[in-house]
Image (cartoon, rainbow, N blue to C red; front, top):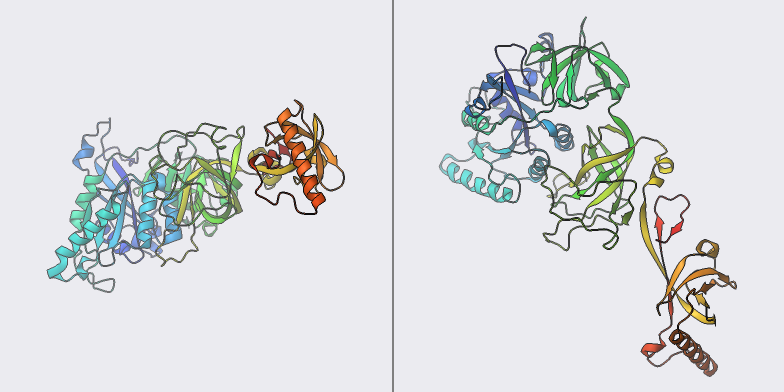
Length: 585
């Protein structure tokens, strides 16, 4: 748990993600909340750096007394104070990145809504991201000073009702809604105007806090949001520890620069500490490097991150996304701290009969895709032209389990098992459509540049193929000649030895070609049944008769028993098999 090194006071750090549509007033709200503690968040002058490691632009924090519910939380060392760190999540693409990057460490979401405009596209998207990443939310209706005083209360009530309606099918259905005016008079107004409702909001936030679960174990992953050098000391990176922990003298890797550095000192809450763990906001001073090379990025345990050219993920479509998720389509994939285009190939479990369908219901969004069937290279999978949804529109059936192969346009660096979100960010921001398309977990990464040759052949995704032809005539009790199954130019050698079934029930094996026109010989191991022979001889007689009359065969309605005998060839072809072999189970 985050705590300062001063043995007399222990501070609990609680991260609040501030989300909302552009211009809903997130920044003024953060400013109003943290007027108690001026940090570097809103103070853009370079001198602030000289005071040691202050926090980054876009992060501000303020400390309050510890609320009662945390005093009784047991534990050997109770905390003395509570620090709220506000993580301002800016515009859209970066919003998704920030949130997904910080998903593990955002403890509460504060959704800021312009009381006049209500829920807008980005607001809805923020809600979705919140559902994927965060257990609790508070909605703040901002800019109530714009409402005429005599209608203010009724307008607030109306908007609160609308929001509760919007939220009723999400995990935030009964979340608190509070009304404020963070900057009465708008951004240009003088600062003498007191914000309205902010003390009440602070009380509400205190009520919503809980002891977050933090895990110091595992590899270190820290999201760096700011980097600068201090002469004579080294280069300082400020950011948030997303997983694992760090300590003075540890060696860390900066994958973007392909270098490792030693940690010289660590600061938290402006005090030197010996280390930090998941959820902490820290400044870390390492041996000198040019800070311009790493404005934002990640730092990790050496060797723990992978650079991937392609990956297999578990996948679930996001319900609000209206489009179809098609194989071969390209999506923006946010993974780790990067967003990159990738082409998708969807695949699932073989159709019923080949394997048991998954039981149970859809997992809650906080645990993306905790699928019943683990992905493994030992299993066969069925190729899909698109993502398959539960039975029919508006059905409550959960979507069947499925996976996707992502092929990135450029390599990405990320931890395994991290959250993956796919979106169509090229959709018009003003079109009222959700741009988040699917979510999942990264299950398997391919680090070889030539993964199409080295790795993909291990991925046994198949297409089921079916060809149909007809029996031309009988040669003897064990052999028939077939036609119309292959084109004239097909290399029949590839098909020799494959099993076929006749519509009359016999099974046989293709023995080879017959003549030059694509006809072929079928060996019927068990021999033709008498009734089949009879049917075939009556068919060839009819054919002979009608041809001798000079008319086409069977001009009158064919009788049921005069249907031609058809030949069926079923086989599988593995999509990534370089030899394109045909396989029969």
